[in-house]
Image (cartoon, rainbow, N blue to C red; front, side, top):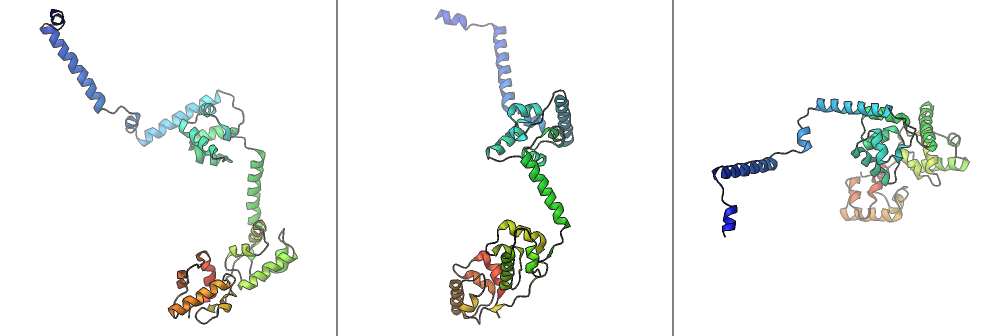
Length: 287
């Protein structure tokens, strides 16, 4: 018992020192608890102007760093973490690129690289001259530019006045296909929308695209409409977009409501093809 007492007996000065030490420890704990030392708090005090200046300064330093090293042309799709660090990309920018590549997608232009990674204009200007894309990408890009230039020089004619001979001038269209386009146009009483060309039987999308580069709807056709309140199922079924089963449903609905006040009412019919409503409505009227 005397042994423990000897270790806990302090004089006046020693007791004061212990209280001071305890006070310092408590104060430090309170400071750590209440004061936020995170970098976000510190950076929030910077103005937008100061932050921009700091970014430009960092880009300049990265440019100096790059100029001091020999850089060889490379495909930006295969930038590793280390390569990205050497080029001056941030971890966040590198991660964005890697995440994009994990989806099986490829960067095919300098602009697309910036959109995906979010690199600054100054850094992009420094590293983009070293980008080396595959030859097929370059050829495709040049081909697209050539198509745009050529399309500007072609005079677009009205598809509703074009003849069989006119359609035959399009690469990929022969006599029979030209006649089929004209026949379908007559059945529609004229094309109202360019997209109706894709409905022509046995006309490939690529060939239809070529046609629309030279022929488009310039003047809307005058369509003779059918009175939905005074027509038979057979007459309605003559519409390109209405089969006989749908025609009977329309007649049945008309009998239920006595008279169809508006074509919009057809949307209430069970099984009505809403995606074709605008096309069907071109040929119907409710007098």
